[in-house]
Length: 322
Length: 164
Image (cartoon, rainbow over all chains, first blue to last red; front, side):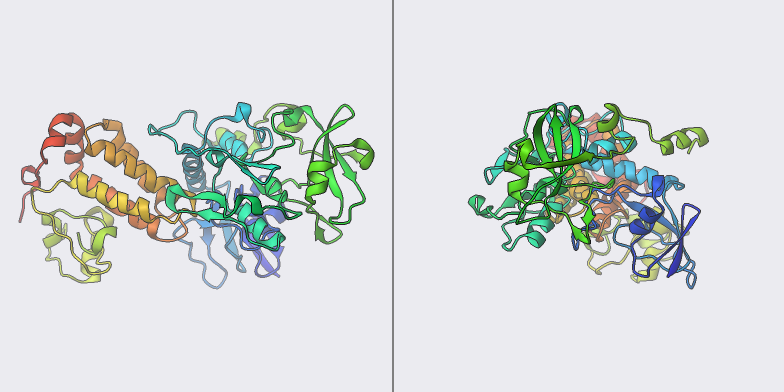
């Protein structure tokens, strides 16, 4: 076990753990935001740069600070490492800059976007974004395309976190989903549009941090905060059948996987509870599900309260003037 | 410009002598003297020399365009930042820029530098930062004389820095 100090809190973790996962072990506001890292997907992370942290001391053996900010999702901890996240002004500045970079080509169509209310970029923009934009040029635009008959891809909203690419790679047997072109022309695409017919392709909707990939059976039906999330299970031959159904009255509006507070699909009985396309898109009948009870939603979530709550870290930032 | 296109550009007086007045040698150590304020890097060892009539804004735009094209698009500061810089520089070069664009450029490249996965972000940011640091007058001339800027070059000969 190695000892690492994050924001003056000491934590013991296994060697080889990343800084982000060590911070998640502490929990609370020490955890840096992550737009692209997804602990259930191999190789994800390092791309969005929102989880940048300052390393004030590299390790007990070599206590020099690291000159650059490092991506906490892909940097393993060392014994005696001292990490600054919320206590570092430099981290705040650069995270605000990364937020601005992510937003310059992101359309501000939250009022008509299905992801609004559970969008990670919305949360990030609320915490670190600026009021205005300094970008005067035209935003890059794409036409929305269909990926299969149940998934819609709005490339305009995409922040290129590559999560769906890893999902399509690791959950399904054929690689039919990837990134084409490069630089700011890069786009998520399918090589052959009709090739998306495997049973777990719907999970790309769950991993998408923004509204780029949305469920066509739920599009424009309701805002997420008007729905009641309920834990439910069903007998399914393809997947574990553990899901969250989003209900309005007695009707099921949509079905998603069970996500934890970091927006990642939970592990149930040691296995990640990805759900299959049949459960997600076709079982909208209440009789097919066994409702287990209400889903616990983070108190600060807009889904719980219909409004955003000011984060404690911003309050402390205002008080200390940092 | 010592070291290819990815290092800070220097005016003639700083390339032959350091800020302290000692002779600059073509070595890694000597070129790095003075840090980024008055020094540069040897990089690949390739030199680019501009004569006094070249347009610095146009050349900086050319580099920015190259890096925007070469950016792989994985990490967000580089993907969005290089494209943004290229667009702002294109505006400045074509006489459609504003005074605040120059500060915006300086701000953007400060935020790309060091925040990317690979050094391409740094390489894209340094020449732009240095061009503004040493040739800010020329950028301002592009804003204040938009009509002339599309017809002729500023001409480094009128630069206040004496050639040695």
